Length: 157
Image 1 (cartoon, rainbow, N blue to C red):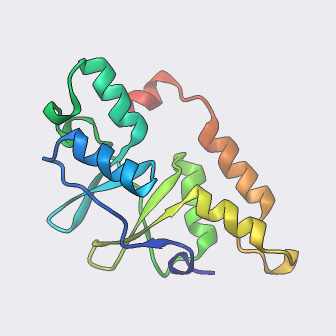
Image 2: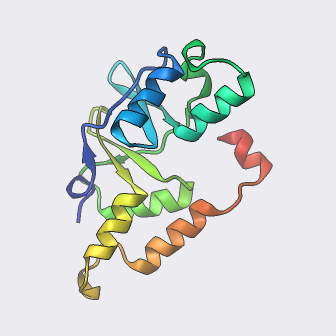
């Protein structure tokens, strides 16, 4: 199975110069926990609901006064739509991320693949020989993502 068969197409996005309030509104309105940050058609960051909450708490300021660019993660791991699902799952495990932006050959955002997508697919597949995402691989990925990060990993993120 390919990433494009499972990804969510045309995800909601925000720009780096928008206020955090805009990202929070998108997450609330569309029931998502993460929004890709796009500038000039390219993914330049990712922002999560946790990023929004922690930024507001630490800054002690209203969301409409803080810019997305100040708190977004700029280390973005992505995959291609035609890539095997197992390859994207390995990348999530290796880099301990719950979501991957899916980009086309020109680097433009075309979708997003989440750990939830992989979990639902693993539950749907019933014949062990045809599984693209095995329960064992999914368990390993979830365990890797959930590991506590060391201080130097947090600083590098």
